[in-house]
Amino acid sequence: MVLLNEPPRTQRGAPDWAVDGKDWPNRDFSKFFQIGRESWHLQRMGSGPAALLLHGTGASTHSWAGMFPLVAERYDTLAIDLPGHGFTSMRPGFAPSLPNVTAAVSRLLHDLDFQPEIIIGHSAGAAVALSLGHNATTRPGRIVSLNGALQPFAGAMGIIAPAMAKLVTLGGFAARALSNSAQDMGRVERLLFDTGSTPPSDYITQYATLLRCRAHVQGTLEMMANWDLTPMERICSELPMPILFLTGRNDRSVPPDTARVMARIAQHGQYICLNRVGHLAHEEAPDRVAEAIFDESQ
Image 1 (cartoon, one colour):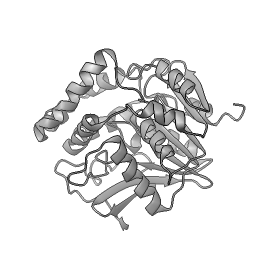
Image 2 (cartoon, rainbow, N blue to C red):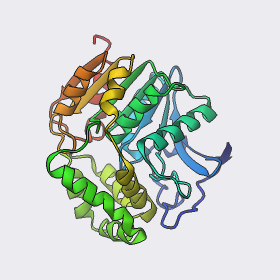
Image 3 (cartoon, rainbow, N blue to C red):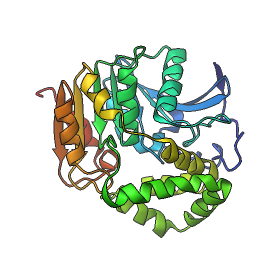
Image 4 (cartoon, rainbow, N blue to C red):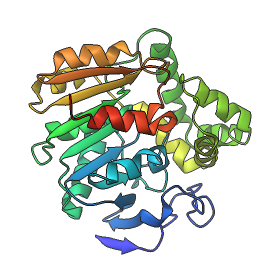
């Protein structure tokens, strides 16, 4: 493992830390590590037992901007950009399937000597969190699934998501087309509002910055193309630790009932639904989400 001053821009269209990251949330806590052919961006703050934050598809550490310092009041908190997202690169030939992403994060945690007591995962990051919990080398004491995308898409999304994923077969052309469309801030706003959330303007600006970077868009498309949630119900049923399934009632990306179903499947599952927030609940209301997670009366 080698500590870097900034991420190497080995991928064409990758975000530039000096330009795209100049106003990045919690920038002072960012570090960059080279591990073999993988280059990672992470943020670390706080002290005490360890907590790991995992963002969803198409996001990055910026998604935890408000939550990060709240969790760090209690924990030694680590937030990472998943492979192909934000300022973390994907090595050539890497297929970002759930098992491969889980294995890559597990290697990073091993090299950092970071053993999380709690893992909080949002959307697709929740699937990674549960897979890490199922991993013999990573056994957290507790897992939080925040608007977790844990079941194969149904209905219209069952058609739309695979169709979008197939864009990856067009290679750089699709990524260029989608990143060019992000020049229109109105389109980015509509994309986020369609999740049932109304995130603050800073988050919208940061999503727009990422979506204008072809490497980030390509990483997102490849993750969609390789993602398979079929094992999640079995994994959930086998995990021995407490799992909180936290959802926003206005979530239009993942049906809120998914959390209720998965809480019933888990050995020690708990279900909480927050009113007046959607899929990006932790961006809209970080205080309320943190309160729900750390409510000691539960």
